[in-house]
Image 1 (tube, rainbow over the protein chains, first blue to last red):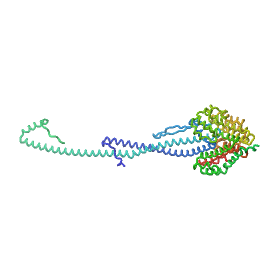
Image 2 (cartoon, rainbow over the protein chains, first blue to last red; image 1 turned 180 degrees about the horizontal axis):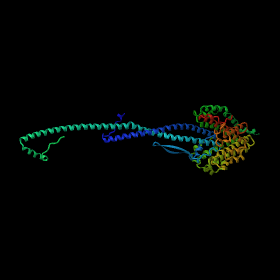
Image 3 (tube, each protein chain N blue to C red; image 1 turned 60 degrees about the vertical axis):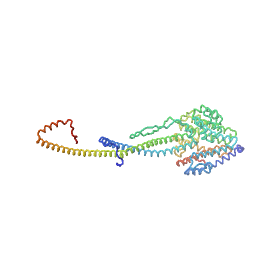
Image 4 (tube, rainbow over the protein chains, first blue to last red; image 1 turned 90 degrees about the vertical axis):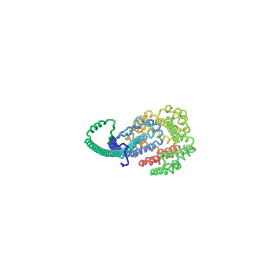
Length: 262
Length: 364
């Protein structure tokens, strides 16, 4: 795996090594944090799944009762009252309030239902016959709608949480399997490059010092030979020493020195 | 005496209706229906009585489609009857349709008040309540126009004239309008069967007076019970009570003062039948269980069920009389109950709620 992720395009310098080490540390912290978030969300998610299951079963029962109470109404009234009810309803009696709930940084909308008691638009429908059934049917349906609202908020939370959990898990996996190995690779690379540089430097220094020693040895031998020669010459012509000394004062003059090679 | 000349004009119609009566579902049919597993089975069981009308339904139709087709059959049979009848019998049959007209007009007024396209409302109208000028109601765009140009021409104008003006139509709740019209209609119908020379002193007057009185009382009681907890005031409520019937006038007065179910029970206690009903459903249940079919414990009968039962019994007894168009009325009521029964059974089957399937009223 680590071979496939490659490394980041950085110059193998000490500065970038420091950066990478910081990055690795950050990635590890982020990884644990995200992992914990994902676990919290998953826990919540399971809870919601369970509640959705319950709510759905409840909805099945309630809707059945509600549909049946509608059948009772049509039996009692002996006709279709749907149109009249649609027309006489002007204001919503059953209302829904939207709220937000914060689950480890995720905002989940929750719906809360409430009835406005003052609104009773079709109170007189079925005055002649079937009024009681209509009232009861309305109550049953109000309960059914309540269940639906509950289910709706759970389903919305379910979808949002599902999405968020996917994103978080993707991030966790990305950090675990891509960012951390890549950073580690980069650090390894930088380290190896730096080691290589160190070795090269060491070898070069060794070479330089070896050459220097050789030069110094050659220069020493030359000087020794020169001294010997001078001693011999002095022994032969003692006055020539003064001349030689005169010549050495001229070292900053026009005469060029030989280049010094290290 | 009335038998001497009745058959000249009304004999055919009566004979036809007696034939129709024989095709009503019997207890045996109902028990077969309750055994059904699917709507298709129900359809199959209904085939002897409703064959042609149900055959075009798709497999496993909805209960409302089923009820619609059954109503179609009722309507076509009734239209045949009304086409065959003459004179006072025809007038009697027309009176029977006025109740449906009231429903249709209430529907159209609701639509007009909310500025709906009234054309689509016409499809929802009950076909029995159809009259020639009904489509013209669509032309009217506001209530005043509706009243002045259209309602005036209809047979129902008299019912409007007595108690409602166009201002009322704008302001009043449509349910109150409907019930006021219905009250006027019942009174008019009652008056008609009692005073029309062809009917007074005949079995028609006998049975129809009884049935209409019962209908009036039932409406009064229902209105009272259903108005508890609504904004309908006692004065307004009182105006909706038909001014005849066994409860009128003392019972009606007491009903108009009743504030709870006990008050209603007290008001009707003068009439043995209604007292028995109230005792049967049990007053101790309070308001919640009274009107509901499923609300009451015990045999599951509610006040409304008992009323329907009583109505069916009365309708059944009408067939013991001869030489009267009242059999048509009785047959209509029985048929409507049958449609509701079948709808109920189909609904129970469709929703898999078999435990309450027996909650219908079998007459024969």
